[in-house]
Image 1 (cartoon, rainbow, N blue to C red):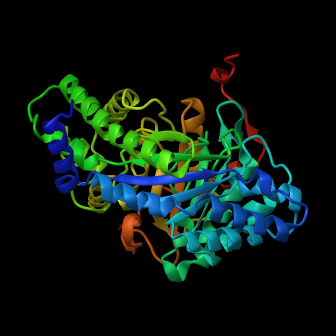
Image 2: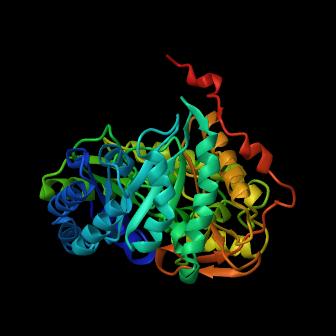
Length: 452
């Protein structure tokens, strides 16, 4: 039976509480595009992507019209391109241009997968692709990139960590005239999931089917509004409210994924039930934590409140979908979250506190803006710290950090759109980590990796 109350409640969530589907992302395997000739391989990539996703945007718009559900982004993720480069050799930028051309023609927001998986070392094509990332992201509009530098099973590839500090810095440098946007399109992962629909880190893992539809939901504003109706509840009651709200949000994602899968004739992959904030007022993970009783996000107690939120979101969401995957939890991207921005501007939220919070949330240091004078070695050390948190806790962590070239702590960097804006945050880098980073090698996997 159709429940009128539930329908009206969902309409109110969409109209007044910023509820939306953040993305439908089509994953496309490019393994059939491998070729010893890179130009021929790139043509195959363009042809397969444009043919497979030719109705993706149209389908998203149909769902929006039919069900009244906003779908903010339509995206594509592809097989890590370094795997194709291993077969073809040559200049990897040929692939980046083919991906960008396909994305422009299809009208999608982003295409991810200019990526490499090097958690246990570099294979053919990996190093070449990684070194090309700054040029690729500066010369394209829609291409996003990611590199997985470690896993709980393999440990941390510190040679890759050392390399990525320089790559991130160069991405920012080459796009300094565009507010360093290149670095905002690059994610460095530990334990990267193969079915993540969110950019900039999405890629279509080698264990995935030929095609898949993955959905990323949103809804921080909905959770905050639900908690506002229980101002005096204890934390057990708070957790219960979050679980019930996450269930409703995820059911909407399940509906969208099922309809998109049916209309496109593509298998339904997963719903990523992450709470993805935006710079819009009322659509903030930080504001959820403040609704729980914190005066400002970043004060003592923030990590505990975030742990409660993340756990409750997972417990509620997992009951609403047969296939939950991706990252699934709560995101804390500083420049994309109005509450995080305010807390960072006030000096309450520091990079060190953010790092502590990443031990219990879904991703890691995300959209953190740092001074342009930050050295590549310091960036590598930050990546290593996040990787260690992910490795020891058997969870995904990531770093998307933007050195603001030519600017210092306290100034602001503006990206616009969903990427938002934010203050440049001070780092504790008056002493160097360079020798530690230069040692290279691998940090061995922890004891909990021996689960067989």
